[in-house]
Picture (cartoon, helix red, strand yellow):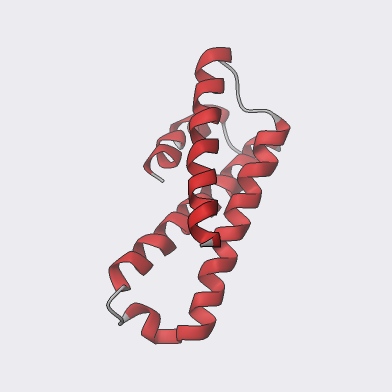
Length: 107
């Protein structure tokens, strides 16, 4: 129930952020960045706990395709967070980071 609620909350949050970015034509605020990180940490923790409990069965049970999809989403989110930090430090170009927004929509 908790995971379902967080997924629903994250979906609403994603819509709010997308509307804000389109309406204001600027990047999301610091609070939005923090909330996005909190959602990412929650999903990472969920996957880590599932892997600790199920181990390799995680990839062999009847939900294996959903589990692989979930790991892919968490990996994409982690990559997006890392790229965002690199962009803030000037390590990569910001225009490249903007192209990763399609990954958020896919998520």
